[in-house]
Image (cartoon, rainbow, N blue to C red; front, side, top):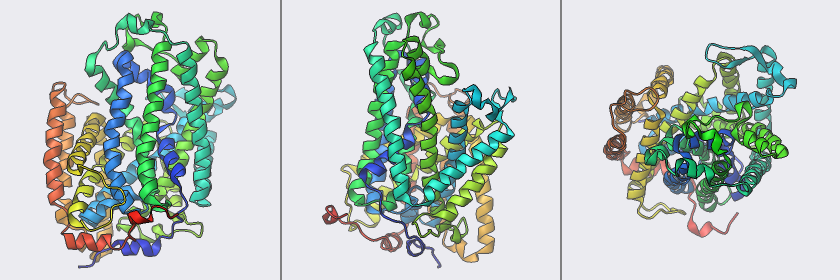
Length: 548
C-alpha cells in the first residue's frame, strides 16, 4: 500500500526554529485577546449578572484540559500545522484530511473577519465612513463600499507581507502588538476597579440567574469561544526552540494569562455599572453602541482618554489577531497539502522559512470571501467557530492512542492521569460543539460536503491516494458528526428545538462523547503503522531541555 508519511512532510518543509517561549505564548494570547475585549464583559453580564466573573475561570479551566492534551502530543511531535497533521500519526491520512479540511474552513475565514472588524471600528470616525455604504443591508449590517473592499484587500495583503519575511519577524511584531493589547485592558481594569461599587450586586444579587446564567455566559455569552484563539500556538509548534518547554508553557500559560485578564476586566465592569441602568435587569443592560460598553462606562466616569485608548485597542486587536491568523492558516494549509487534499506544491517553504505559496492561496481565498460576504460577513463567524472546535475533537483521542501505539517514544512533557484528562477534554470539545447550536452546525455541513467533493476529485486524479486513506480509522467520524447534529437539533442553542432540559443536556452530551471517545480510540492505526509515521519526526528528548 502506498502511504504518504511524515517523511514527505520533512522533505518539503524547511521551517526556521526561531520562535521562543515568549513569542509562542504571545501567539496564543494574541489569538484570544482581540476586539472581543470590548464587548465580552457586557455579553457575559447580560447572561449571568455579577456571577459572570465565575464564567471566565470555569471556561478557562475547561479549555486548559484541551490545551494540556495538545501540549503532550505537540511537544513530542513538534510539526508545522499541528492541528491538521497530528491526527495523521495516530489515525492515518484519511482522518488527517478530514480534520485538516474542517480546520482550514474555519482558519481561512479568520483574517477576513478580523479585517472587517477592524474597518468597522475605524469607520466610527467620520473621516473613514467611506469604508462602508450608508444603507444597511437586509441583515442590518452595512456592506463594504468599493473603496472599502480595496482597503480590506490591502489589509489582507499587509498580513501576508509581514509574514513573508520569516517567523522571527512575525513573532517580534506580534509580541509588540500583544503587549499593547494586554496593557490597555489591564489599565482599563485597574481604572474601573478604583470606581468599584457593590451597588450593582446589591441591586440584583450576585447570581440572579443562578448557575444557569453562568453556563449561558460560557455558551451564548461567548466566553468559551473567546479562549479558542490559543490554537494558533499549535500551528507554529514546529518552528519553536526547545519545544519540550516552549509548547506547554505557551498553551497553558497563554490561557492562564487570558483567564486572569478577562476575570479582572469582568469584575471591574460589574462594579462600574450604574444601578440605574439595571431597571430591566442585567439582561436588559445595553451600553456602548458602536464603540462598546467599556468605552461608554469610561466616558461616563469622565475617563475620556482611557475611553479613546479602548477604541484604539479595538483597532489593534483585530489587526494583531489577523496577523496571527495569517501565520497559522499558512501552516495549517501545509498540513492539508501534505495529507493530499491540496496539491503538494502548496507545502513548499520559501528561503525565509515560511509557506509562501500556502499564504498566497489563503490570501486569494480571503479576498474572494471578502467580496462574497461584504454585506453579510457575519455568516463567516458561524463557519469560523464551529469548524475550528470540530477540528479539535481528535486531539484528546490522538494523545491516548499514541501512548498505546508508541509507548517507548520520548515524551518531554507527560501528563499524569492522561486517560481521565483526555476523556474530560473530549467531553469539553463535544459540549462546545453542542453549544455552538443547530443553525451553525447545519451550515457547516456545506463546506464539509465541498471537502468531500474536493477529495473525490483528488482521488480520481491520484488513484494511489485512496489506498492511503485508512478508511477503517475514518469510519467513526461520520456518525460522530451526525450524532452532534441530532443533539444540536434537540438542544436549546442556536435554533435547536429545546427538547433537552437544562442540565440533562450536559449529561447526555457527556455520555455521547464518552461512547465515541472509545470508538475513536479503537479505530486508531495498528502500532506498527503509527510507529513508522512517528519515526519520521526527529525525537525530542527530555535531556535536550537545556539546548536551544
